[in-house]
Image 1 (cartoon, helix red, strand yellow):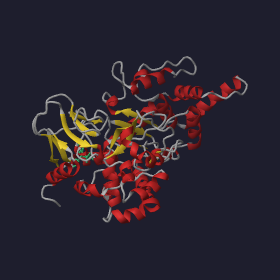
Image 2: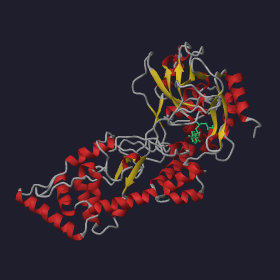
Image 3: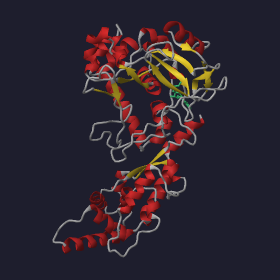
Image 4: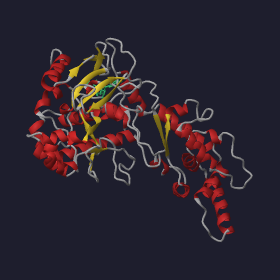
Length: 485
Ligand SMILES: C[S@@+](CC[C@H](N)C(=O)[O-])C[C@H]1O[C@@H](n2cnc3c(N)ncnc32)[C@H](O)[C@@H]1O
């Protein structure tokens, strides 16, 4: 393409846009990471790179573009997100990767390995969503701008692998002079609100969808005030060449006044404190992200962004890795007495999946010592709620140390039930109902009857099978493949 892409980019950033490289350079890192930012010389104030915010490609910037603005504004009014490329930035966009490691770019063989997993479904949804976004909203505009095959996928991947969520000063987003023209955009273009939710259904009750599958521009219900910060997602050329590491040596910040960098309204890369070795790569942190795709849900109360799905790479020994252990709901239809099992599951509010920090499983099924992790605490609390049906059955000593949440074990116990156990549980429950004139058992009473009848052995056996599948499973093999390539 170009003889020396890094120096052409630098020239572009410096000459055309006024970026300042103080103590760093952009250089090819390796075939995995592509380009990266490297330390070039000592800087006393720790400021390594300064990029004027005007250079950032944000929704606001697209709206202000004379060529694209009017058409894009119409789309924003319909609350759709768009990444546009302004004339000035065409050169910069040309320098960016043309292929990615995220699932949109998996080969057919890699995809085949994923078939049947939630990953596969996520990917299908994402592709479908991109196609309908294109057909419904972008076709006309894209024809003007994008000419190459797979450009839309590239634009999508470029944005989501490189965008920063930037805390911009209100005065910068809505400068006085443009107050009027910005006011109508103000309520529709402020932050892109993305969350990922249950994939099994594709959409949860709140209407959220998987990241990259459905990108929503959240309407701001209250207008931001003069002294408030407005979070805007955007590409910041230069800073977006920083690769990720959990031990990041640098962070980035906004300098509104110019007191730190000499450039008002700029974004700068700041050394995190320790001296940087000359020629060492300078990493930032993309946040606490696990390797694999995860689906947060209300019940897990977490929304985790993962590296492979979003950024197309994985880290060895990633301390932020979570593991989703999931008994596929479809498989319940194949267990004997599926209808009764399904009824019992509902009656106990059993969960057929759970999300655990991977490190929690370092010592097998049991937490070590007084685990302070969220998962450990949660499972302890859950177990305290368990009790014996007859008062004669003692909770096994391991119960409080199991790392799995009780709602999940409840589901597995139920799924593992055999015919005689089902019969025994229904006898216990019938007795209970009769003894109190027809009042139906509560969920914890059903749980107790199931636990007392079946114990944990069936549930633990299913767990072993699920974990074996998960560890030797399809997503992992893809992750390993990506890590090795
Ligand atoms: C913000 S860009 C960083 C610049 C990029 N390396 C380039 O050549 O343009 C993010 C992308 O860099 C790559 N990347 C970042 N950190 C990485 C890491 N620790 N290991 C492998 N690839 C990484 C991934 O492809 C990711 O999607």
